[in-house]
Amino acid sequence: MTTRTKRPTVRFRRSAALAVAAGIATVGAVPLLAGGAWFLPVLLVPIAIAVWAWRAGTDVDGDGFTVRALLGSRRVPWAAVDGLVAQDGAVQARLANGHFVRLDAVRPADLERVTAFAGSDQ
Image 1 (cartoon, one colour):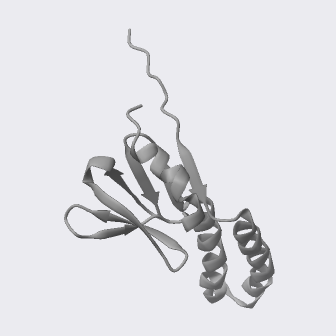
Image 2 (cartoon, one colour):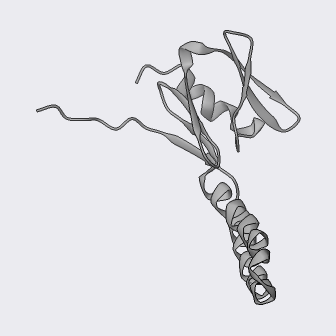
């Protein structure tokens, strides 16, 4: 029987205030349904924003990082990363193939926490 050890992970997410604001917008859009079912897409927009705010972000561990979006995610191992670039309040990973991956919800002030995992052999 093998025991799985859980690796330490740092999760970077957007402010919870964004999800709360989307929830309030959803409640505010409900009365529009009295005007007809064609207003349903108006209700779906704030719901999608609330789910995105809850789900989207970056998870970092000793093996790499996972960037999560509304409908999908992308896992990138540290071996594929050439460097981290902080620019205009955002952080991007420069990959060995020359492409860039934006680390959602990671700010330049968080780079020290991210790089601590990049060099670890946990």
